[in-house]
Image (cartoon, rainbow, N blue to C red; front, side):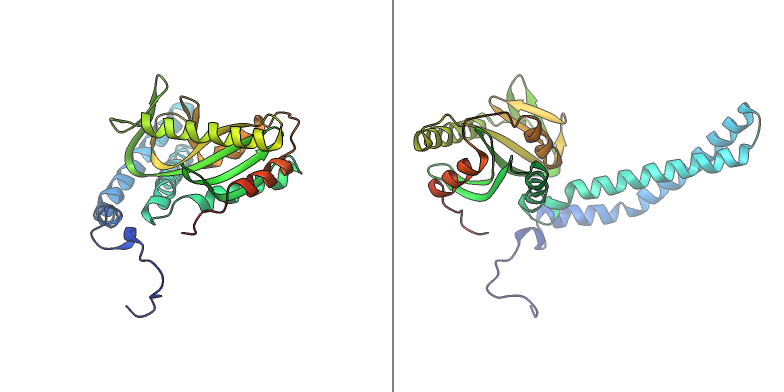
Length: 255
């Protein structure tokens, strides 16, 4: 196709027949249904607003308009949130770009209390999306992307994607954190605790924050707030931890 870079790998999410393309086709097919629902909701809001105005004793017309506008605003926000929540998955991205921006703001606002690295290779465990160093601690931030209709839940400390248990995945994250902690502590001769935080993109999360074993999962925009609230104090500075991690764990292969 003209305009394509022959050296650039084709994004499977944008190829016809992919789950993302089928989702978009179904979304377009539901356009008229959403419009009918919006019109009916507006009419109901007008009637409810008018009756409310009559009951409170005046300006019923303005109450009706106010209720209708409020409904349309609510419907618009819901529409935008739905599209925004599925954007990363729909475009076949891995979520690292948005999380990187959020962590960059954390690094700037932290004024030296945080240092961030991206895409580092942990021997035996693959690539970790982001490393965030704080005093005496290192946070391993992983991005996971799910289809909009997938339920992501944690039940009694166990992680589920739909009905499938993800115990092995959680155990792998925990093992990676232990390895990183041991490697840093040995190299620096100071205690450095490593923890895994998973930034969840898309899916239907059961709660705003979930815990499975020693792993915490949450929406990407919450990750900087979570880390900042638990920065703590330690003998090793963020800059020392980041430099050591940069030396021990090489850069991951570019996407």
